[in-house]
Amino acid sequence: MSLRLQCHACRHFEWGVIDADRCAAFPDGIPDAIWLGEADHAEAFPGDGGIRRAARTAEERADVVQLRHSAHWTRDVERVAHDADPFGALVLAVEASPFARFPDAAALGHAWSRSEDAVAALFVLFRAGRIGAIATGVRLTIEQLELEGCDYLDDKGWLAVGLRLATCVDESALANVPAAWSALATPFGSPYLTARVQQILLRALRRVLPEPPAAAEWVEAPAASALGRLRDGPVAFRFAAGRRIGIDDVHLLEPWTRVTSAKELEEELARELVPGHRLHGRRGLRAVARRSDGDEVLFEGETLAAVVRLTWAKEVDPRWPATDIFPSVEEWATRRMRPDHVAFSAREPRAIAFAFRSAVALSSMAARLPDAARWDWTVRDSPWYGDYLWGKDGPLRVRVFAAEEPGRFTLQIDVVGVEPAAGFDAEARHLGGELLAALEADSVEPAAPEQD
Image (tube, rainbow, N blue to C red; front, side, top):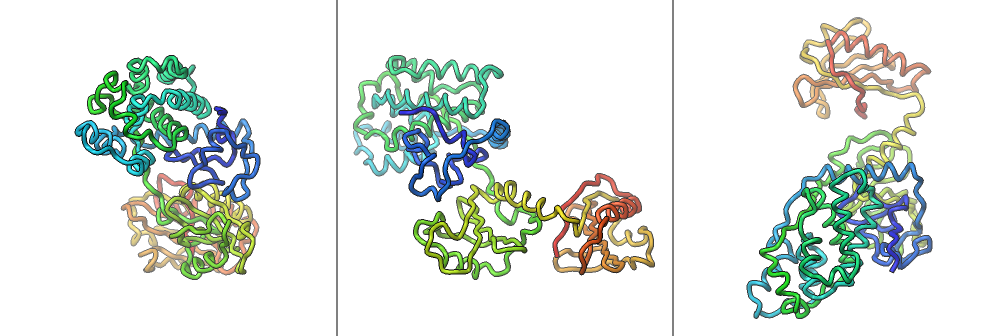
């Protein structure tokens, strides 16, 4: 079996996702054959939607390594209680009643696939004598830690992890079950280091053994006395689940806007998808945003976000409609919406906005602003924005919106009804500076303009 993990060098691998091994070709999880190197994904693989392995540059690798570290550091680390984990609880139940009926293969397999308890997994594999699988899992873990940039030479904590794992790569070393069990199951220093190593090791073990050993192999195994009971052994650690970012948490940037006909778009998507398309058969895809200048629509699902360029025709080729898949709405916002906004805004902007703080109340701002005859400053009421200050001179419009937090506001200057003239950006920024000074603004920073 090749231990050169090919996915980390591919530009389609999702480095920002730490809860699963995912990529653009396989948003539901990379198949074992590709992950373990049994299939070269430079060639076609069933279900990949035509996306193949593509090399990542050295500069890109540095960026994604940092992305991976950041994704881990933003999560809290939690202890995994054996009795609260599906697989750990099953093992404890067998320990408590060793003469009860053994759990069947289906129950074991279901618990194994959902478990986050690396210690319970190792406990069962050691007792079942699956030494070869453990050795392979350790080698895969070492390989992945290296690819993820956990540099043993620059951090004493990772150095200790590397030294300890290196003692368990040979089956002969693992034959000393008490010593190997202590090396792999005992926490690796800090909870952070332990959670990261155990997470990778557990996934590696499941890659090697998609189904766990039958209960008869480990309940009364010869190695049982050497390990004692799981209840009395070390604890496992995991990274807490990340908060799911939905479309309601994202401030949309033009040309992306909220959809107004979600049902129509969802029905059209279902009509265009044919067997073989990467989204065919998925349920619960909701149309949540679309580009104002084309037919691209963002659909949000439970495990992914997909940008689909609808063709508005009955398709027969699974390559169409063209689709880009992201692991989450948050990833879509970072990797698609913001670049789209930059490209769309490369021409002279139609609006600029500044967020700021001020001790001046919105109702008192009109009296402080200059050129009252020119702008005719007025406080208006809107069902969308609430009370806001408004002034207009020809196509040029100025508005001040109050934020929910007291003392925070947004000043927006835009062009209405016509294309902005050359130099609008410089003119608007100069005007904005005058207005912000009159409002005694501080903590001023650029903001995304409100879209009408």
